[in-house]
Each structure stands twice: as C-alpha cells, then as structure tokens.
Amino acid sequence: MVQATAAVVWEPGGDFIMEDIELEAPRPDEVLVRNVASGICHTDVAVRNQDIKLPLPIILGHEGSGIVETVGSAISHVKPGDHVVMSGDSCGHCRHCHDGQPSYCDEFVERNLSGARIDGTTPARHNGNPLLALFNGQSSFATHSLAAGRSVIKIEDDLPLELMGPLGCGLTTGVGTVMNALKPPAGSSIAIFGVGTVGLAAVMGARLCGCARIIAIDTKPARLEMALELGATHVVNAATDNVVEQIYASTDRGADFSVECSGVPVAVRNAVDCLARPGWAAQVGATPGGIEIPFSMDRMGFGRGIKGVVLGDAATQTFVPYLAELWRSGRLPYEKFVKYYDFADINQAVHDSAVTGEVIKPILRMS
Ligand SMILES: [Zn+2]
Ligand SMILES: [Zn+2]
Image 1 (cartoon, rainbow, N blue to C red):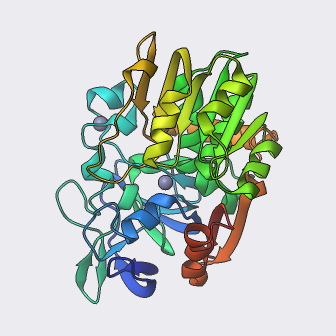
Image 2 (image 1 turned 45 degrees about the horizontal axis):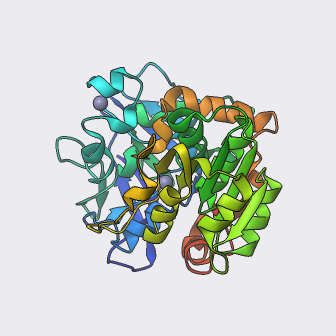
C-alpha cells in the first residue's frame, strides 16, 4: 500500500475534497506513478457535475504527468524513474487496438469511464473502503496514480514534465482530430467551433497541415484572440454574428472541413451547415446525453458527412511523443494558454476555467 493525497468528488456538483488515501501495489499490467502535475479537462468537470454520469465518490483527473515509481511484472515499456504522460486505457488485444485505434477499443468505456478495473475492483482505499479511481486509466487528481500500463506513455527526460500532461487528452484530441481523422490537404479550409484547449489544438493542427483558411468560432473574444495568435486566419463571434454566413463569406464555397468542440447543439448543426461540397465535420464536443439534433438534408449529400471522434483517432503511445516533439520545436506553443495552480487550489482552478472561462488550460502542480 502507498499513502497518497487525492482530490475526491463525493457528491454531484460538490467541491473537490482533499483526502488521505491508500493505493495498492501495481498488478502485473499496472504502473505506480508519482504525479508531478495534472491538467484539468472539461470532462472532469462534466463528471463532477454529473452531466456525464459515473458513480461517486471518485478520484477524477486524466491529464497526468509524472515519474514512474514501480511497475508490474508484465510492464516492459517503462521503468522506475521514467518521465511519463498518461492517456486513456485500452485492452491491447481487440481488433481496434491492433489497428492502432485504442480510443475505439471494445473495452474503452469499461476501462476509462467506470472508475474500476475490468474485474470490477479498484486500486484505491479511503478509511479502508474501496474508492473509485482509474478514471481514464489514471485518476491523476492525486499525488500518485496507480495507472493502467497501456495508459502510461514515456516521454523524454529533458521536456518540462509539469507542462506535458495535457498532451494526453486535450492536445491529442484537437491535433489528432485534424491530422488523423480529417487529414485536410494543404490549401483546404477548416472551421473550428469552440476554441478552448481542444479547439486551439485543432487550430494549431490545421496550421501544421497547411490549411489555407482556418476559421475559429467562439463566444469569448479573448479565446478568439488566442486563436488568431496560434494560426487562425478568420474568427467569428457566435454571440453576435451569423456563424454559417460568416464562414461562407470567408471561404467562398463553405468549409472543406469542420471540427465541433463545444458540444452545444446549435454549434453541431452549424458545423454541418457550413460545409462545402464535399466536406467532413468531426464531432468532438460531448453533447448533452440523450438529445437529438436535426439536420437539413439540403446541407447533406454531395459528399458531406459527420464523424464522431474520440481522442483524435490517435495511437497514443506514438502520438503523444510526437506532440512533445512538436512542442519542443515551437510548433505547438500551448503554454501560451496554460495557467498553473497548486494542487490544493483545485476548486479555484475549476472555477476559473469552467465557470468564468478566464483560464483556458489550468494545470495543477502536485510537487
Ligand atoms: Zn479530457
Ligand atoms: Zn482493445
């Protein structure tokens, strides 16, 4: 057993409460990581608020970065002392895992969105009682993570470890959706709805792909400013402008591609309505559970379609180190929209990002 401190969600919408917990020693396919930092992602807040329903109490957090302490007997890709980023877990033996698409693993939901191992047990205890952990293979809002081995990704030692955690979710999702799922050819146009971390990562991904016109859509002027700084060529304020008209005006024929990161139903509709012929929309933002969104068939057909994308269609064990190299060479400068907080200030960090929206990517420092 390892003693750790974790931020626990006990009730829907409640504050994160610091608790002393115990973690089991790693099983053969698990890794104990001493967390250095963890990003906070919108999904953590959505579970806290129970917009995404997982059982409580639970330890959330899924953009952890840290140093390996001990590894299970079957782990060979990392060793104690390695610097690592954590991403989602997958089984490693289903068809989609073999095809390099772990986010479509047959066991993805059970492994990442249950808070338990596939056998129903959990590695964490609070006052002797089982406590749900292993959220996205890691539950990184804690000083230590008992992580699923396949969620642990080695990165180079000289990278700034406390900045690297968001590569495991937000950056992989945004850049990967453009590079892996849409693959826009150089010279094409792309509209990106919602420029928080994922949308801004999509903007940077589109720039790297050579997109000629990159249109960012949001309701917050400060975020549109950041999108321009990172490579957007046009911005549209959805609070004041006719979004689809503006996208047509800045592309002549509609957008060849779109990425919807907000999950707001009207934005999902606009992400389809703005498409050229042909055109592909990628749906990334989590929409409210159970809703239906109508589309005009006048805006479908002629080679247009919409595709749901999880974790940027990325083979995370290779994509995360690739993103780290892009950051190192100045081609993924997401530190521009990061703000650091002490782990103890997690509730303030959630407030500043999810309630007021003044901070785009908060990162908690555990040490
Ligand atoms: Zn996330
Ligand atoms: Zn699998």
